[in-house]
Length: 363
Image 1 (cartoon, helix red, strand yellow):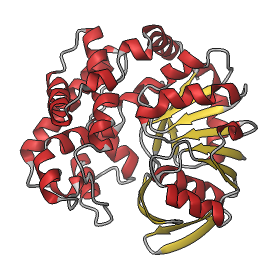
Image 2 (tube, helix red, strand yellow):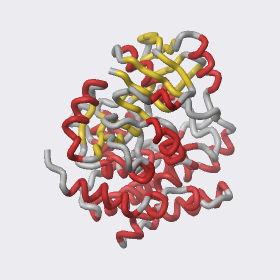
Image 3 (spheres, one colour):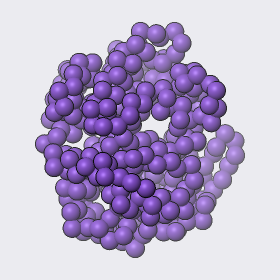
């Protein structure tokens, strides 16, 4: 299968190597000059050589093509978009001329980016898939070398339009295993774990992030068995998220249950314990190392602002969500709402189309 990957960060490079090792023909496309240029140059100069270190098991892949040319998405079966979500709309506009009927655009994570596809690619007969979270977690440790920290055991994905769900499932399952399918991209958008865990853990840790000078690991410090009050705030935010999801017509899934579903095959284990074990893993990379990092500057405007704007439209109160947005805006000295995913930016009609499609879903 031919797969194009948009984004040469941690997720893009790891997944490109992983799919190459699964004998897919992968084109890895760098979409900016913001990060990881040294790694991109290494791949370009070394026949796409990317090594995965997965708990001591070393495998090296030679990615088929490494480029900055987004037109290379043409001719691929699946396009996997894994750039930061704050760049999704501009990237979707950029690739729109090269999208072809019948392709699957997999956005990971989505945060309702299907709405941007409907906004900018209405003339394209494509399938959109949104994933809740990254399939493989870890870091590029040096050019051409990625250390795997974790790999989900299940990866929930929503499909739009629902009439194409069976076809999409067949193609996506051919690309990768461990995929499970939701009723709508809306569920994937709102069950993105970063919406809950990154925002609470990082916003409440702003003094510690600054004081540590880069020696901070959110999962090891903000989420431990010694932090019950932090957990209570997380649960309040999670309840607001579930109130919005329920009002949209979908089932309430607590963050810990969604985490357990993605991360564990042990159905007997307590969901919160699964998360705490996940947080305590010694393979956790340090971060955020600065306040103006993706944990806040991405997940607050792209995640919390989206949740707040949906809540307002549905008359669902989101006080903890609003408080975190205000604190983040104050800390960074800029208006997170102006940067964020409001209904106006996503398009009320686009969100309505997504929700109406889910109601008509039958498989």
